[in-house]
Image 1 (cartoon, rainbow, N blue to C red):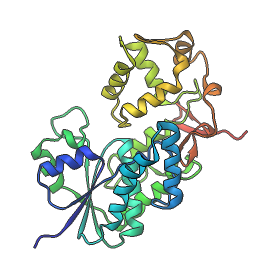
Image 2 (cartoon, rainbow, N blue to C red; image 1 turned 90 degrees about the vertical axis):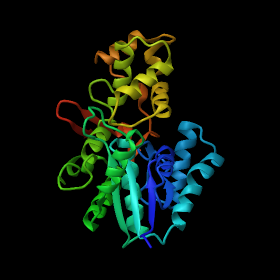
Image 3 (tube, one colour; image 1 turned 180 degrees about the vertical axis):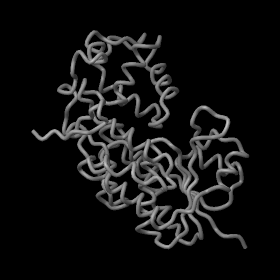
Image 4 (cartoon, rainbow, N blue to C red; image 1 turned 135 degrees about the horizontal axis):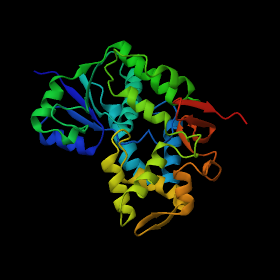
Length: 314
């Protein structure tokens, strides 16, 4: 009798693809986006899920029923999966996936001590200039990825948990100093993802972060007839964040005053001034409810030249 496997995947698309390819074992789909909104390090606790629901409700209008049916029921299913010999994690290179991956490993460290944990992570593929997601791999490529999966050592698990704890802390400054100092780690895409995360804090230059500046640049440099076109262009161009329609639409909404039209897409004069660093928009965006992990988004500024974060003390 072969060893039993529990697959934990990054989304329904991957789960359905693996099932279609007749992978054996049980499947759990991790349906969260912990790269967005406030997080606490105690994954699975009542406080953790309450914090997540409050964020998803306020930012994305997610109903309690949908949150329970879509996310919590699947999490409870994960809690009941205890007997498998091996737990295989299926995640991708981008920030969205890498943060979810850290969280899952942190949970496994606490609740599945001693289990064999292996990792399949897609990104660079021979013959492709673009980074590829799991569902973009053909059958041979995904089977090869599975064959080459990495067994995580206890040190790897401890390291992932440590980075997760830092991500959930109230200051990103320690994360800034440690994330790049583990070159032997099997998490080959993590450093770039964390670097991209730090650039989500507002820049000193104009008060917008990397994603918000990219939205303005994309609007200014392309002929786009609708908001839908703008979102599609952002998803096509941006690889490191892994965001979809929901996240980009939410970001565009916060920048509404910097657009004069969405049919076609045009920046306002103020939008152009912000884009070209002639006007700082920090004061209009600042609030006390926006979080990136455990840190308040507007309590830190990113300095593009030095690639360093500065804490606002007043």
